[in-house]
Length: 149
Image 1 (cartoon, rainbow, N blue to C red):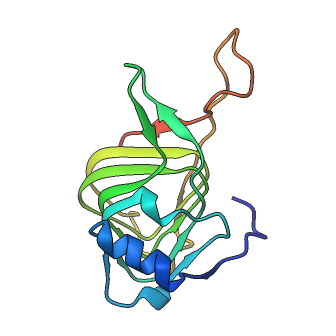
Image 2 (cartoon, rainbow, N blue to C red):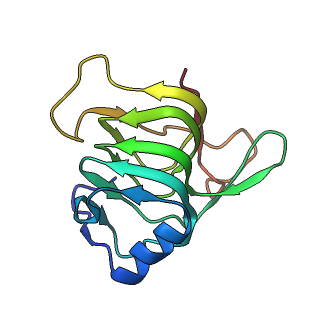
Image 3 (cartoon, helix red, strand yellow):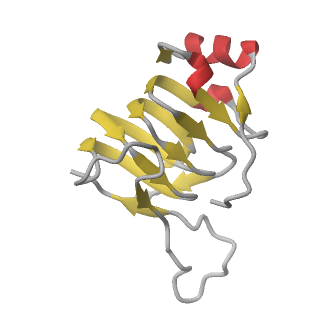
């Protein structure tokens, strides 16, 4: 995630799409997004605290061959910065106080919080460092599946 990323407020149509997708937030002004943000890729998400969301353009294919679009579904995200092309789904409780870097996948976990709670979303980092497997080019999905329990 580049430090020069520019964020903007959500537009009224984006907020409408998020609400139609079951998303909730007490104050939509605390949710900031990048220019390529696609609100239709966020379903049943509760946002709280200061939130920064990157764009989602990639599809993640798991080891079984099942594909999922990047975005967030069935999760509560609190005080986090979420990078570009991140997939978060089926979070039982919440993810709080993280800087989730680009190309990260977080699925099917209960709760994720840093050991020391930090006062801002620039807390602990979850990042991808996956390299292509032998014989594969560098243009693959580049995702790293991070299992949190």
